[in-house]
View 1: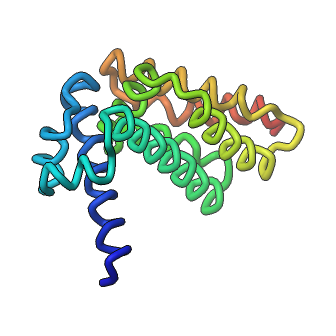
View 2: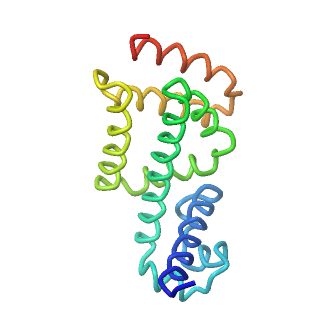
Length: 173
């Protein structure tokens, strides 16, 4: 493994650990020491790669936003828009911790640059599948449903049919 690859592995471990800490304990719990412990790296590694807490948090927000766009793209490319219901259910079940971290990081950072990048990525996906539809409408609806289930703790089983019906209406099927 090259030095650059090794360095990237450490950065990735730090970001993944930050997401875990944020999901489990909130943004306030993120410190270089807590992240180093969670990542299994030295404290000096966290400060070398990310000088400040804000740097670590922004890297975690970028990762979670990119991860979300990648997952949506995978679902869309594999099975089309109707698969978004499955993605949404995954978000509130097996991906719940990452989803919680995403919301916590969004609220804490209010990073316009990251949000714009994220929006462009989602818009590009939307343009592939529904050029006549403003994808922001679909994302807002899915985001509201996702947040509703996360906050209420209710069984997400109803999401699949609700999303299928709403997408049919929005996409004109």
